[in-house]
Amino acid sequence: MLNKVTTHWKGNKQFEADNPNGKTVLIDTSPEHGGHNSGLGPKAMMLASLAGCSGLDVVSILDKMKVKLSDFRMDTYGELTNEHPKYYHKVTIEYHFYGENLDEKKIEKAVDLSVEKYCGVMEMFRQFADVTTQNHFHSS
Amino acid sequence: MLNKVTTHWKGNKQFEADNPNGKTVLIDTSPEHGGHNSGLGPKAMMLASLAGCSGLDVVSILDKMKVKLSDFRMDTYGELTNEHPKYYHKVTIEYHFYGENLDEKKIEKAVDLSVEKYCGVMEMFRQFADVTTQNHFHSS
Image (tube, rainbow over all chains, first blue to last red; front, top):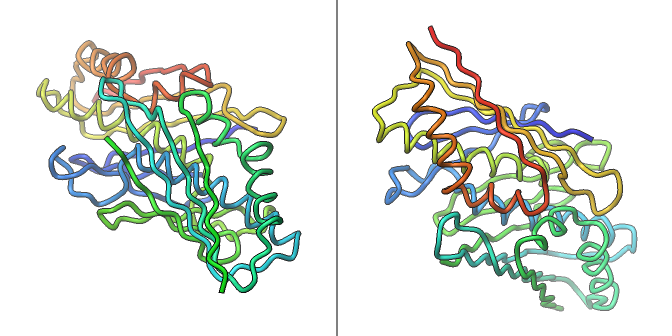
């Protein structure tokens, strides 16, 4: 399968990226790099891709397992190298699950399936970074 | 440097990712995967990160070189493997530059500096994909 994304310069340090279904995202830099923070920086967007990919797997698998969540969030941390080109060499994803009487075993299984089998973005990250995952359960 | 992105499940297949300066992006899947196309897919977002990273380098370098563009766009193509986990094994970026009497040598130099030296996202992509770049000049 071939994915295509078109990324258009909007002036100054702002870019708009869109895929063929017409959805767009804004990319920008912070004022110290001459931008206006009107969108995510490209490296932050990499972390959003990673969390989005794994999160989509997890909610799809939990849906099939009939596990209900009241809330779900991922905090993703990426440590950049000091030298150019700066890339992430350490990445941590903290999965935070909220709900009543959470079935922790099933949720752990869903995360494992994403991390080990399904999440293509995770597989790409493993080629350049040490990736660590942690599950946090907030049962009510 | 440590980057942090928080990615929040919004229900169904939709996620919203934000970084500490408060900017957000929406992630969703296509209807055939149960989503509503309300945002970019996570793998498309990877290509947006790559183009955004290199595009920011190029406009910053060309600004220092006093090279003016009337328009600038990147078309990025990523070919996914057939088997899970699906990752990009071939990626092509087509840089399209528009302007009057474009200084092609300086623009090529700017692209080369981004590709070879500055773009951290490109460095990450090189760890899992064959990355090819092409420059297209549209001088008026």
